Length: 329
Ligand SMILES: NC(=O)c1ccc[n+]([C@@H]2O[C@H](COP(=O)([O-])OP(=O)(O)OC[C@H]3O[C@@H](n4cnc5c(N)ncnc54)[C@H](OP(=O)(O)O)[C@@H]3O)[C@@H](O)[C@H]2O)c1
Image (cartoon, rainbow, N blue to C red; front, side, top):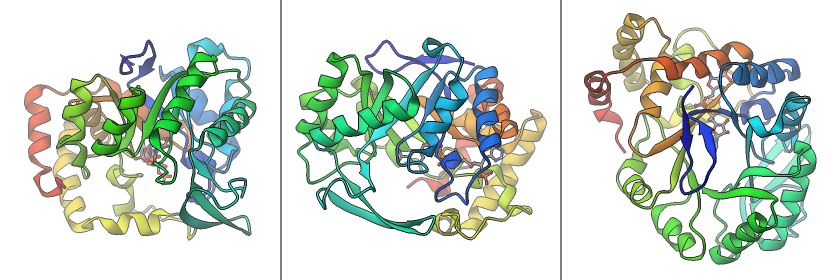
């Protein structure tokens, strides 16, 4: 594994960081607890030291699974990245910005983006309890909340650093304008944003700014939630309550298939999978500090961790990037 320093902090994160969204089950058609724990263990055994989760993932379940998987392990050898700012339990009393409604185990839930100081403090206490730890390595605002001034949110995170509850503070899903605004109060360690071979929008304005200002980029959904593994073009099917039934529809799937057909011989020549080639390309892009790779089971987790060992020369990287012209947003 390779390890990288996050922004202006002393946090060393694994370049491939484990993404714990799918193991929360909600929106992903569920997941087996045993598989989830094994995925986390396998990641750690293969050099992944950093785990990214959120209260929203499985409405607390993802954080609880991480706590269970880390039982008996040296806490100082892993970095826990979690978030705040998506509220589903009604505790916001209608405050914040309505995001979407969702059904979970027969419950109808309304999810709000809400990043007030009081809510952040409350959420952090809940996360610490679920994670069974007394500090969070990186706390991130999950989604911007237009109803709370960004300086209130950033001040609250800065205070949590001073109290020792979190080691570093980051944001997620910030566009350039909001990131600049947030930085006036407190320069975040990182911005966690969508980035993949099919979605390179951040290269235009966000990356030049973060590189110049030493803010880390944590890239999420690098495999486009599994699409770039190629398996859905073969025989994999999705459960009816898997959000990807809709999510994949945003892409021109014929073009994606054509791209994967061109990448397949490159992967075969290196004796790696498409998913591994895709992940390695992503880790090598300018300004990308950490790539979050979701995995439901040990097999996927090992494959993803090992992706860091795929060797790609500058020429090979360029050949791959040249294949992506159709996808630049
Ligand atoms: N900040 C945000 O708003 C935000 C949003 C999205 C994600 N994230 C973070 O980013 C992480 C990663 O993104 P993601 O989970 O959305 O998507 P992803 O990492 O692009 O894809 C994960 C999915 O890809 C498939 N997969 C994983 N490893 C594989 C392998 N080795 N071979 C074949 N298929 C493989 C699995 O699909 P199957 O489930 O079909 O097996 C898995 O669920 C999340 O877990 C979360 O931590 C953050």
